[in-house]
Image (cartoon, rainbow, N blue to C red; front, side, top):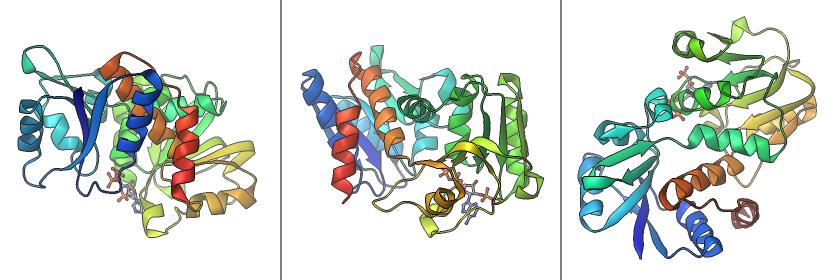
Length: 270
Ligand code: ATR
């Protein structure tokens, strides 16, 4: 049995053990996947002890993604761009390889729901770590343009500058918003506090999609706002399952079916 885990703090509510147990069952892989609450001041030690105990790889969640990034011997291109790691892999000679599957998870979830990204006009709301991880996979899908808006305008401007080599991307404050979009992605943590980003009523183009990177048993405030404005709605549950599938693939070289796990997870929320 090969050992994997998710590191977080807190980590008790993590759905990752459930998701990976289902993937393993489905693909007939014998693995053990647990949740480990690493101490806030010693993530590197927690990872080292896990590897010494036979651990082969891990997922990393809040608040350790930057620390995981810092301890890797080798990093994927998308992890480097994201400045954060959500997937750790023990490679040859015990070296640690870091990747970031979060952004690809969102892109795959969009594909699952047949949301057109190529040639789409996309608005990304927020400019924190979650959005930084998303931009490379998103721009690789060749959208017409990506606008990033953020409460702190300078952070959106900096992101747009960092990613400008990958496609047409602009950044600014909410007051710079104009026009309508085919896809509006809420990448802020505003939903956590029940806050709504200040978007104009006409932000959605005809048959647009509203995507919240968060999820909960009830629709998020952003999706509750977007529904009556004509948007089709998606929350972040599919992204969670898809990023997990990408990690599972990196570890096991087998790609699980996400559809049954989506259903299972949705039921587990009620
Ligand atoms: P994460 O890792 O989830 O991206 P983060 O890096 O702390 O977390 O980023 C949080 C994002 O949510 C930021 O874009 C933040 O805006 P600021 O950069 O202006 O702080 C945004 N955010 C958080 N609370 C918000 C609120 N109530 N209204 C609007 N934006 C909010």
